[in-house]
Image 1: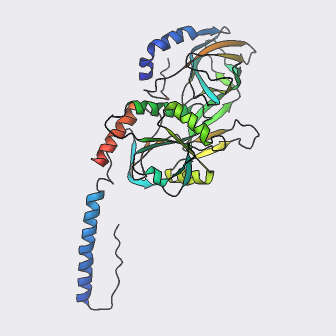
Image 2: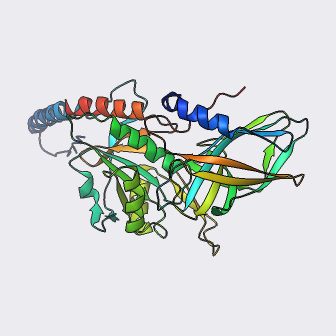
Length: 220
Length: 156
């Protein structure tokens, strides 16, 4: 916002008045322009089965790879709406359920609008290299994209999105450790910012309806 | 419940086929496994297990010739995360039905011997605390994906 630092001038009152007046006019112009372009941005559509963030959260500074092995960074989140889910392929229940719901969302997407992205981020890179992720997500839909990479990079994005995860028994030699993780589906806007959160139990109809409403609200 | 209405006929057939009266006092209804990705190393099995006796029973182990091992897991939402916890045994309270369903208790089957597609039949060998064992056959079903996951089944 506009924080004007007021310099206490030693000079006389008339000069101070002029300076303050000039700054006020400038501030007014800035606020006005800012308000007109961002007024919609900081409002939220109402009555959705989603939590829409009044202040979208930027997602920055991570370096991961997609399931083709190509770099995936914050830049890749720009230019289109994206759904994001964090899970792992050795997940028997939560992840398949969420991906099947997203499959259902894809069936309901309006034909006349650009399809969003569906990003499945693995929080288990040791067992989910790109090739495994690719086979896993494309089973649900060929449009879906798996994202993986080093844990410290994954942490950069999960921290910004409020996603938590943890391993159970990973120190055992067994390959069968479990990963606990947040199960929200997130909606990221074309500016690469987190915009909305869907919590389980999900419903394909609600999610696709919410996407429609949200897109119309912010894109006009 | 739109998943059920969409697949009502299929489910009716499968449920009628897969209701098993077992071990005198246990019935298992509606056992099924969602089809998983061919690359998946794990599958889940869901079902309703009813204990018709006046005594609590426990399922102490489950095996399947088609998987390396089967475990029973609970699911809970704690500290912002979904937690799965292996259960050493599954308590079947007297006179009650325990529902294994998405988002809740489920059987977790590890390392399928092949990819089990829609229509495959999975054999589950269940052992109780009184040493009785019985077998059920559960179908693999490919959901249409139109509908809700983690629905709350209404129980009697």
